[in-house]
Amino acid sequence: MTLETTVERRSLPLEYPFGISRGTTTETEVVTVRIEDADGTTGLGAASPSPHYGETPATVEAVLPDLLAVVEDVGDPHQLERIERRMRETVRRNPAARTAVSIAVHDLAAKRLDVPLYRYWGLDPAETLETSYTIGLDDVETMREKTETALERGFGTLKVKLGTDRDLEIVRTIRSAAPDVDLFVDANEAWSPRDAVDKIDRLAEFDLEFVEQPVPAENPEGLKFVSERSALPIAADESCVTLADIPRIADRCDIANLKLMKCGGLREARRMISAARAHGLEVMCGCMTESNASIAAACHLAPLLDYADLDGSLLLAADPADGVPMPNGRIDLVGLDRPGTGAVLQS
Image (cartoon, rainbow, N blue to C red; front, side, top):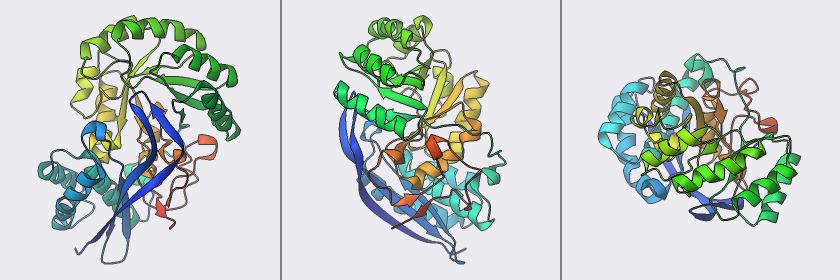
């Protein structure tokens, strides 16, 4: 089968500066991949690489020709397992680049059958959930204003970035502004184990759902220390990158947070979900700051999840791609009226 491929790199401004404990960004770079078959059907995917995991837009662009050559060599977009295995063999690192191609091939395969991706997978679109909306680190008053804006837009679940000497004040302020929302916090590895236990004891009074990645990923025993003493459930993010990490974190947290840009593909993501379930963990799917060209694919995992943190495209000032409808943050697979992932470029 003849397949035509194209790659485009774009810089997308964020609606607000996005702060976490490691720094603040004002834009994200997205590398979009399109794979077109001989009938003119096109699969769309995208990479939003994170330097924290050793990947940049430049490295994505550098390896994409080799990854796309794998797809062209296999020839059949329905041979998804073979394609992802061959991509792993060809490029051992660069998971965001592999994910972009994985998404595009899944999109193409489902479109060739004229079905949405969730149906291609055999999932129930009614078994979905609401995405959280992230309040990035800033001065406390600005974080309050962002919270009020999120409430006005209908979001009922908020994620708050922490990792400062103002953490208690931040959560107190946001909870007072949003007393009825489901609320969880993310320290992005900023705390020491003992500080984490102490902070979580004080944060527990604010009715939080859980705490995400309280300690550095390179301190697995510290994560276990916190998990055994925490007044709140613990989610592992930076400690949970690939399938091999699931058994390593199983006795160190309550929730596994997978991200497509970390794990390297949609089939790998589904394996991680199954492995997490087998180890008694709840599952969340998160994201980077991303376009709908990749977020849409992650939305189709919603029927398999306990939590969704898929607001990456909602944090953009403008997104060149449209995706799965999210009225008031609800991932509406039933309302999706397009085949494949549902992602389409608008400009």
